[in-house]
Image (cartoon, rainbow, N blue to C red; front, side):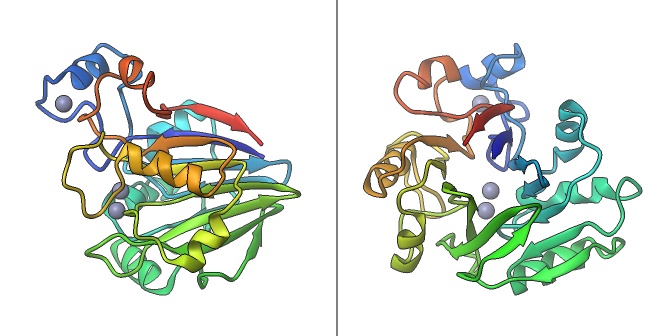
Length: 246
Ligand SMILES: [Zn+2]
Ligand SMILES: [Zn+2]
Ligand SMILES: [Zn+2]
């Protein structure tokens, strides 16, 4: 399976509008601190699946040359994870979409002008899509009460995407996340910020170690990190269009 981080930014994206901090300055000059909002492409011979549909999805599809996907999985109903799905309007009809019940209700209400193929799934119950096995698991992302991470299996390979979450992930989910070949983890800031909804980079790396992940890549990264080329010396930050083969 091939994994592409289409967007590694937080809800604001980097550069943040109007900001001239070091990361935003690097982003404005075209450096790797430039980050679109959250989408991940997972593909194999059987097809292509998007995990979340960033508000920046249109540009993400244009630059990857993709005009069709086999399915979309939504982790939760935050704007930065679904709003770009509207860009499928008049591009691809009847896209199969997957998510938890309330997440689907919320997003499809927002996207009332579209008619994707709705598939409500439950946490802990695997489903097949494009030759890959997906399972959603519960994470913790207050104040919303329903947020999921995604486990993807192809053969013996295991990809885990935490989705947006703080460190208080339920034990049953931690069991499912254990031993990933690749853990793509939410890390919105470096340590030292008072976070409630997300992990910081030390927490995310520590989680990967505790769960014996073979490789950890951080995403959902804000402009509060130093510029990418500096930050990467301390933490395994992802960057837009980074690809990994499992
Ligand atoms: Zn988010
Ligand atoms: Zn900034
Ligand atoms: Zn969120």
